[in-house]
Structure formats: structure tokens, C-alpha cells
Image 1: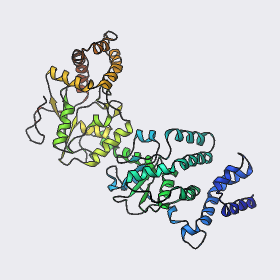
Image 2 (image 1 turned 135 degrees about the horizontal axis):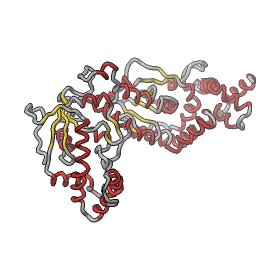
Image 3 (image 1 turned 180 degrees about the horizontal axis):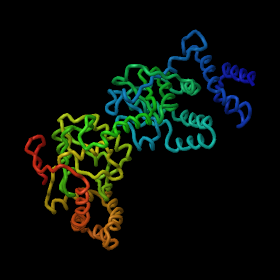
Image 4 (image 1 turned 60 degrees about the horizontal axis):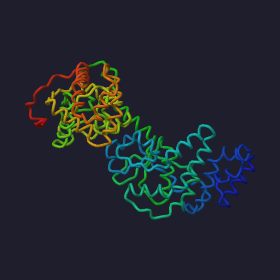
Length: 452
């Protein structure tokens, strides 16, 4: 067997065949293919050293890998969740992964699309990691130009060399790449790549970029999973703090928190946005981050986010800071749509000072109509959602709300919902949330805004 492996290595070195290509020449489950699979990493490295002597510029000395095979790794803690020190952040995961959650500054340039990722994952689980690797390599080879073009577009650069001219060398050496962790961190203009775990997807693209002459490429070690752990740990509270109801030193929000409270339609969200316009960086828009108005019909016209994306949004906002020394938020229950406010944030919101807002019923009806019926898309989504509200409100005739909407009785419908549904929900919320009462602001910290 060893003699056979030596012969394979010699054939690879003297021809255009890499161990990966030679692997595909033999039928599955043959001794030759099994031998290549078991030793492909070593063969790949030895072959790359022979084939890469000129590129490496090392005089043909076996044992020294080309410079582009040495990758720089960085931890999320040195990058942060904000502007990433001005570096470009590229998310190489499939679109479905990116949609669930991602670094706030990341641009999605997928190495595999959703269907390709699913197929490779199935092969990995049901057949073997090696066959999954080969299939993934096949997909990437077909779209490598588009991949590079996407990265160039995201970073404002030009593609100066033919990417396919170096793809073969990179593909042969994916499993032989070296990654280090320098003491310094990425700077403005650098390129940070990440995939799910900081594995072959991000490392192979980093090697590809470096082989094309890019000198400022970083691989995020641990990938998205490390980033997610970084965000999640920021919301953890110690047992001592959990047992105490007093403020603690490791606060996420400023010491002064103002909570806008009031019935549906009084304009809490409008005021929140106006405060942000007048005092930039002074609000925390939980409903905006959740993509939900925090009611049974709160998803109408919006795109609710995942729990992961909700937490990332909160942490990103907190990391950005509150330069005016206070935070203004809307009164919410612990659950905003399907997203749950992290306990650490919730405990701090409970210490906020409540500002009660009121508005006449006619004004509230007008605002509800403007919010939920602004276009045909909103109207269709509302029509689909109303039956679920009828089921919750026992005693209502089936089809009552939808019928009123179709007959053009929007204002009557809004008034009915305000008087019989939202009042019940608001009363329940007040009994659950225990804010210190705050009815009038004399400090001048907040601008005066007329609710009508």
C-alpha cells in the first residue's frame, strides 16, 4: 500500500492530476480510493509543495508552504459588533443563514446558494465528509468568478487577475492551510471573512484572495458561532445580580431610562422617532429591531426578525452608545412579537421612569388606519390576520372584522379594536410591568413634543 501511495504522489507531481482529481477516477469503495481518502491531506500538502516551488520562491525546498497559504485569524472580541474598526466584513454563508442573523456590517457574498448548501450537507451526513467536500468544490469552481466579483463590489476593488488561474492551487491545498492569530487587529479597509465556524469556507476564500495578491485579509476564528456566543454572553447576568432588584455596575443601558407608555394609537412610536431625530443616539427602538409592533396584528406590513437577529440588534445599539446620558424606549411586554427581550435588558427597563401619553379616540383611530391600511399590501396582510383576532376575542361573530374591512368601514373597525381589544391588552401589560410613575418632565432632558 505504501508503494502504491508513493506512486500516486509521483503521478500527481509530474502531471496535471491532483490527489483530489485522481480520487474521482476510481470507483467508490475501492482500496485505491480509500487509501487516497485516508492520506489525502498529506498527499495534498506534499503535492502542493512540489507544484508550488516557483510560486513560493523558496528554491524548491520541500517543507515551506507558499505565503498565501498562511492565513491571519482574528477573534470577534478584537473586532466588535459595531463598525468593525472600519474593515469590510464579508459573510460567506448561504442566504438562508445570513437572513437568520449576521454581523450588522456584514455583506452577504455566499460561497454556496441555499440549495447547494442543503445538498452538500445531506452528502456530508448520509455519505461522507470527503464526498461533501468534493461536491462543494465542484459548485464553487463553477461560480468562483461571480464570488470574486461580489467581494470586489463589496470592498470597492477591482479584479486585476484571472481568478481561475489560481483556483486549482487553492482547491488542492484547502486542507493544508495554516492560520495564525496576530496580536494586532484589523484596521480600516481590511477585509474580514467569516462562515459558520471559521472553517473551510472562509479559509479557502482567504487563501484565494491572498493568492491574487490581497494582503489585508483576515479570517474570523470560530465564524458566526463565535460571534453569536459573543453577543449571547453580553446578556448573561451573574447569580448575585439575578437575586438583586437593585441597579448593578455592569449595566447595558444608561442610568436614566424614560419609558413611553400609553394606549394603542397615542403615537409612542412617532414620538420615539422624533426624539431620535432631535437627539440622535438617545433611543432604543425595540419594535423596530423586532420588526413587530408588539401586538397580535403587529406584524402587518413589517418583516419580523429572528430572536438571534433581535439580540444582535440590541447589542449593536448598546455598543454604539447613548451620548446624551439617557435612553428613551417604548413600554413593552417582555415579548415583542415572537422576540423575547433578554433578561438583563428587561431588568434595566423595569427601573425606567414612565411617561404616560394620551390622545383623543379620533386621533388614535386615524393613526391606526394610517399604520395598518397605508397600501394594498398592508390591507391584504391585515385581512389575513383578522380571523385570528376574532378567535381570541370570544363572543365575536365569525367574519365580523373581515366584513367590516371589505365594506370599507375601516374607522369603525379601528374604533372597535381600540375599545374592545387594545384596552384589555394595555391594562394587562400595566399590571405586569412595574415602572416607577413619571407623569411630567421638568428637567428639560427631553424635548417637548405635542402628540397630535
